[in-house]
Image (cartoon, rainbow, N blue to C red; front, side, top):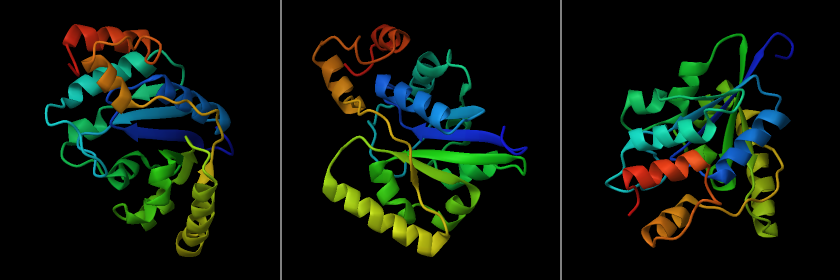
Length: 204
């Protein structure tokens, strides 16, 4: 808590499955932003990406509980899954906003660059402080980020701040491919997630 406000982070995504890169990002988000609590929120139906037609959000929620549940200051929430339908960030922010709370929203570079195309972007900027982490080192992307932040400052009076962290080269897409191919994923995901995937026969 700083200046009487509880600092709350929001880290949403499909998490199909959650992996060590997600966990590392969450840990750095908590540490660098001095969060009192971080909500890990798997989406019901993501508005920005396609998911497998056989996807069961309850599996993704269960895997998130195994990946993040033991971490201090992290709380896995089913609020978007329980709400159902397409998961819009602005609805989640409204549900969490309180006068004594300061909200911080974590996203990747691709989301940072398209934030003004989300539902009600002005309201998103009003309700929270958007934060991004980079997974790439492309200088062209850096120029795009600077240009986009200039737009955001002019439109919404805020920029999307960066939380620096060491690049972790893991993707959920690659993990699903490895599982389907019968390859070992134990070095890429928390042990509880690997065990859950095997027990439930996911991604085969």
